[in-house]
Figure 1 (cartoon, helix red, strand yellow):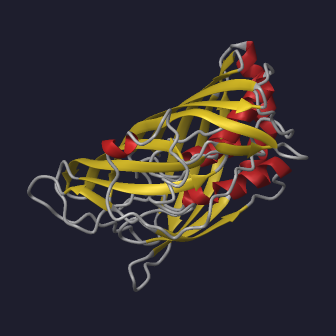
Figure 2: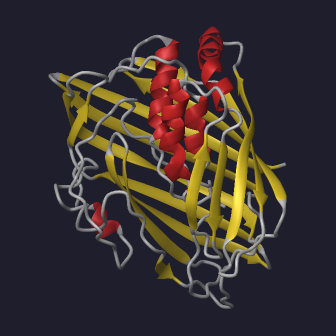
Length: 369
């Protein structure tokens, strides 16, 4: 599992620092900075690694592109990157690759060296496994900068009985959430602001079915009793992050050095075309080590952001987003043995006549308990 799509999205719920919606620009108050970071992380797409933190506005309402069922038939490469200016694609280019809200099948880049064998998940039935996720976040913008407290989340997953088609039903519970501030007064103030969101998200439940290729379906979320309004909204946004809690693998037999790609189109504050390149670094029996590199381009410069009332016109001026991760896991395990990853993103946008720049950096660590 390479930064299963649970990580950042769950982090979102944990960083829901305050009930009031943040403004488009970042305010100096630590609670507002924390809230803006929560909103940014809420948009983390569901690809293998954490890697996405678009425009930090909780109540964003992006212009919705035309519906499309377009699916790519080949992997994107450096030549495609060159089509973007300042990280933004011309209108219609993303639509020619993939439709909004869709995720491509696995696209092979290289089958790797011999010997080659298929990668297939074979989860044990009626098993319980737990992972600990640690996250640190730094948010900058509007002349302000803050490093948020360390957040720790414990997720317990339980498998059921394997279906005839090989699908494995899985249920999960967020059993514990903690925020650990340093002695810095600003961090301690943020920790206090985050407390209501933390308390109301603990107990979140998820259920889904995952097949031997790592594709998940029938994803359902159940809010914990007493979840506040902000948490309810964020929990619903997290749904896409559970589309797959394990990295997808190709049907073809592969060896060490094999590479494959999955392309996604996510619309959450910034309409984003994102692709993840996976690489099989090492395999020994059921044990594998994978890397993932995520790249993102904005599909449009046209945005609408408005926290209540008429939307405020916003123009995206620049978008830089991406990250890397490595994970070690077993093809029989629902959670990784260990993993680390990082994502950085910089967004420049124009609200009315005011240019704004925000930057977010997230570091994550996974440990099997």
